[in-house]
Image 1 (cartoon, helix red, strand yellow):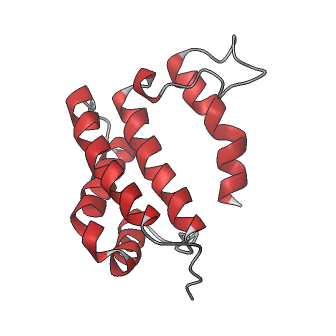
Image 2 (cartoon, rainbow, N blue to C red):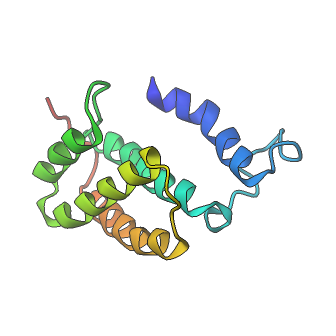
Length: 131
């Protein structure tokens, strides 16, 4: 269900943040540039993209899991990406729930952690069914 919600609302949410909604109504992802987003939106995107990739590998987040509970679940299955996932989760919680400004250099640092978690998920061949 969350995948459907993200597919329907995420393009418009990102376009609203960048102010491009009015001109890109028909194909909202056509000119999507991650670097054009504000740093807070970039960090949120990094985390949500990991949720989607992990779900494809069989590690879907349950509706009632907090980001920290999900982090523990994912780390148990990807121990080599534990530190990167901790950093990514902490940055997401801060970007999502804190009122203070998120700096561009913080988003650049988090991007490196995101790329390493993505690589760890790619290393898992095929979909793995977890209970």
